Amino acid sequence: MFRGATALNLDAKGRLAVPAKHRDALTVQAGGRLVLTAHPHRCLLLYPQSAWEPIQQKVMSLPSLDKQASLLQRLLVGFAEDMELDGAGRVLVSPVLREFATLEKQVMLVGQGTHFELWSLDGWRAQLDEALAQGDQVLPPEMGDFSL
Image (tube, rainbow, N blue to C red; front, side, top):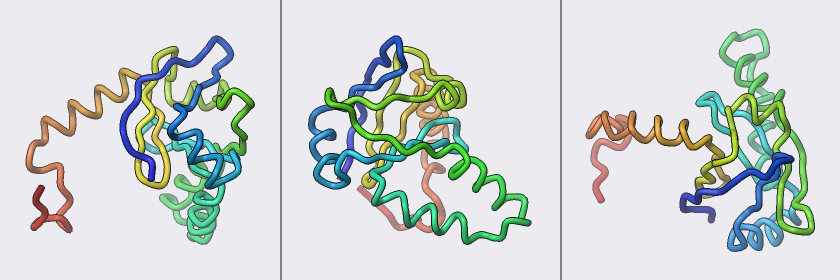
């Protein structure tokens, strides 16, 4: 289970050092094999390869002539890159994906249970501000009876 938000820095080559607590779990769960891809919200998604495969199958089973399905396929599968943790527990974020998510030196790695989101610091702050501005309306209708 991946959770928590961590501020990290990309090095000059675009490498991201995965925090040790997550690195160990990724090594056990997926042998260090990962998939990094684009998300429509302009962040990146980092999945253990084993968790990514069923998602890719589901996305690719969508009708390719449907505009929305095609867009999702282009983003999620078209940008997907297979990678492995290096000996120092880092992943290389390609220039294409760094440009897509406007990643510079400072980034946020945010656990989402089965995977991570990787945000530019500005993108992370903007989406948090937007969510907080919505107040009670941030919950989807399916969670109308939800309470903490």
